[in-house]
Length: 96
Image (cartoon, rainbow, N blue to C red):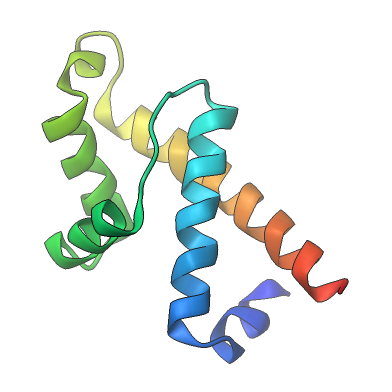
């Protein structure tokens, strides 16, 4: 349902929504991470696939978590939370 709304939004707007959704997901998962515009942009240039970007971020910035969690588990948890947050934000924006 929301996929249609995503494609109709300007790229910058979609990216800002996505970045904010990541930050909300991090908070929801109890991670004290925050992606500013620069960090998000750098990660976008690393890889096309979301999973690869997240894995790279965890491996380079929070490697210590990999001693307790499998990288795939972390990436999937973040992706799922991000999608919930994104869809929620998208729904709130369409209500206005």
